[in-house]
Image 1 (cartoon, rainbow, N blue to C red):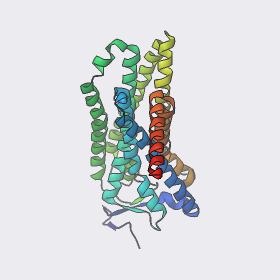
Image 2 (image 1 turned 180 degrees about the horizontal axis):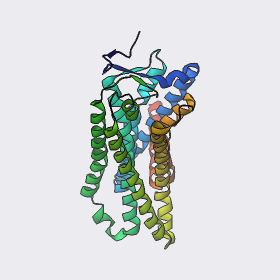
Image 3 (image 1 turned 90 degrees about the vertical axis):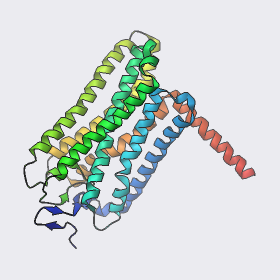
Image 4 (image 1 turned 120 degrees about the vertical axis):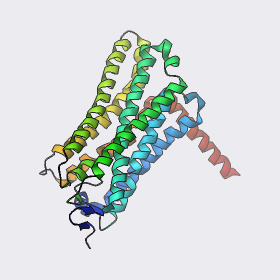
Length: 320
């Protein structure tokens, strides 16, 4: 049965995800590892979110921003993992035209929001360390709420614009050489010129590279301030080092995926290409909350306390 239905070489009802050709011999192993991975992502992110929500002492800008980073991790991975597991267990890896664009929106808005939230974290740490006396006036509740709202609304708006442009293209193919739908893979299927899409895409990528530059400049100032005092250096090490780890993870993984999608060689094996494509959906959602949970003292102590309380309640329940 031909699921890639094409009418007059322009009407696409379904896309075929051909990246699964390399998973046939390891299907059940990959399913098991994927379910374990997704379970860990949900648990560690949910644990951080609940800890911050329940403890009023953690209702500070830095922790509220961290909570948003974890919420975004759950949001982005939900656009990939359930469909990925379903495709692994299916004989035909297809996705509807509308479903494909929804997946593109979910996965790549997640990546963009990650950069925005990390930039907001850098700004928060810059104010806290370089301008401590002004911190509470600058990072007020109202301003923090506005900045968090912008860190979601701007990436979502950018992705709507990109997807709208892509949806107007006339497509002459329906095969996507990946494990999931990706905007540039759809653009490459266009019958006509995709110059506008390419330019807009590069502008959006440049916009988020500017986020990385902003974060780097913030950290130059932070390092200068940290070198002046042991107390400031301790604060920098405790709150900024995990942020740098998170930034490096998402930047390296996503930049690799974008560059390979546009300029990668077809001679690279499908398995390697698959791994490259899912890095930013695999490593950052697990590593970000784990790093913060282990390094930030307040978070670590609160999680341990909640686990102990839950354990005590379970023991009491058994006795009753």
